[in-house]
Length: 151
Image 1: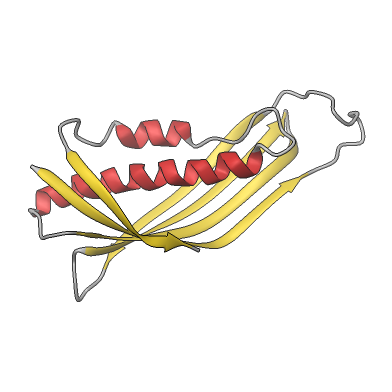
Image 2: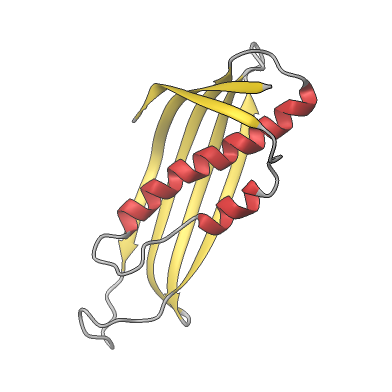
């Protein structure tokens, strides 16, 4: 069975990206960096219409050299979507996981675009995407129709 989901768009509540100057390093010098990603993912649905959903995503990524903070990104956004028709309750959990993966991929594009400016390595959510992908059934067939716009 093919499941259809309507993407009603995204709203960014917070977008903050900071880089920090370090006196002990020269401008343009390459420094090793470890990235730490913290995600808070919440999904909810409308009481009036269980097919309408909202995904709240709070992303905090820090780039550090040893214990020194080099840069950080805070992105707080929410995506609105709805299922085209009513599906079995057991399928809804799998569809929700699929949509979390879908929106993490979209969010990763934003994260990489912003953090690639003047940096050799952009931040990435690929590890989180991989973790969620493992929870989505491989035989799940989903089409996402985008009708909303991004703010």
